[in-house]
Length: 151
Image 1: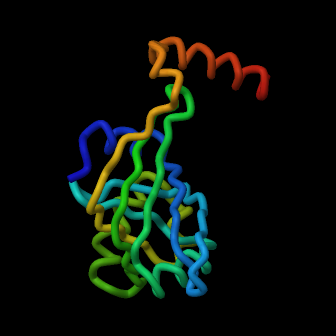
Image 2: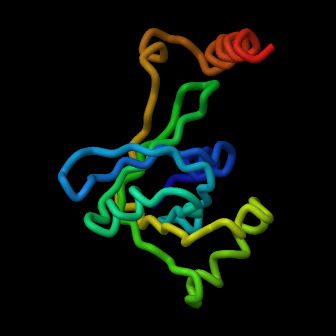
């Protein structure tokens, strides 16, 4: 089950980094910006230009996706099994309107939807929290960093 806080994180940030294994056994990590929470145990993303991720998941469906709130530096690791949901199927047609609500015409570029059945969720927390840093302090620090980077 995906905890509510993790579902809220995915809904707010949408960007997840998915780790897969190539057919040659090498790790591969790729960012995907179209994630949605499908239900309490499933996430999905619209595949636009991710042929290697699709190949990897077809060969070995096990994967892990990391989501991180860039300001509080907390997040979640979701481990699960990926499955391709192809255009022209009833499942694709049922999922597509949820993506269209968020992404609009970008969904016209989807080649397929990758659905991940989540089997494990673990928290991600940056080390400064170990010494008493608060979320408010992390937000202030990263707001300042981002405003320097993007004035």
